[in-house]
Structure formats: structure tokens, C-alpha cells
Length: 218
Image (cartoon, rainbow, N blue to C red; front, side, top):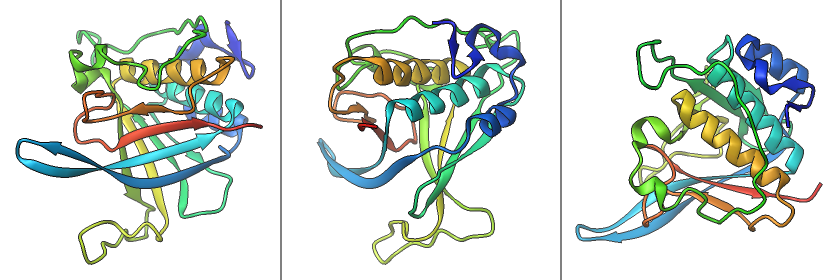
């Protein structure tokens, strides 16, 4: 697979992420938020989770934008969401390591579809990897000009307009993009794929929300 939606994957180094978003259009997906409890020696604690549900084409669209930010000329972009609800879009920002850094910016991307996936696709590798640089990070942020209020127990008021933010090094973005492309093209995918921060299946960077992706029918 050398091209996807008209984009040449081997020539992503010359792609402007903002122009790519303009050509691909808005993302059609549903985004939900929740909390998952874990027990530890110090007691029980909660981790917030972001769940992104979309069809195969929109998973591919998100993957392409992640790749464009990791490899292309623009390291940050905003991908609008064309559905009702408080989430107005996904803000994507890739780190730009120097050419002397071991995690320097790549110049191209190749992809061979993987036909089998697990619910925890990066486990057990994710337990021993360098999660600072090799795993993506998910956050929630407020729309510019809007405040994201907290409610009485300290949680954020998700009725207000907000953005989902995805950050990371290029290698993390490429890994996440490849996973989304696999999930979109796998004939019989798992019901969902989970990228957890705890519970033994670490799949996101530090200081991150957990992330869940669900592929829905067209």
C-alpha cells in the first residue's frame, strides 16, 4: 500500500498537515469520556479515558493526519469533527527532535497491512518500551476563548466545548497511525482496541488519558 486517499505515503516529508486536513475534510466520529478504576498498593485510583468511535475511512483519515504531523512540513494541526456534541475537533502536535537525536524526524513511511489485532495491541512490548518517546499521549483541552470549568468533585465539566489533543514524538505518531490503519483494514477486527496507562497493558505516554478506539460500520 503506497497511496491512501490520494496521498503518497513515501513522500509525506513534503506534505503540509494543514493543507492535508483541508483536502480530507472533517472527521466524522463520536467521542466519549469516562473513568476506569485501578487498585494498587497505595489504594484505588481512577484514570480518565477517551473513546473515539468512527468508521474505517475516518480511522484512515486520522492516521494520515498523524503521519503528516510526524513526517511532513507542519508539526501541528487541527482536525475538525463534523458531528454534534461538545468535542469540536482533535488537536495534533508532534515533537520535533533535532537531527542528532535518536528519535529524529523520519522522512518517509511505508505500510504493510496487518491482518490480526488484539484488544491490547502493543502488549507486552509496551511494558518495557521507552514510553516517553515511543507512545502517544492523549489530553483534553479547552477551545480558545472558552473556559473548561471543573465541577464539585474536581472533574472537568464536559458539557463545555473542548478539544481532544494527541501529542508525542514522531515514532509514537507513526506507531499509532500504523495501528489505526491496521484496525481500519483488518477483516475481522476486535470489538475495540485499548491503549491503557495502567492495569498491566500500558499503551499511552505518561500524564495521559487512556485511549480506546472503536470501529463502527459505515
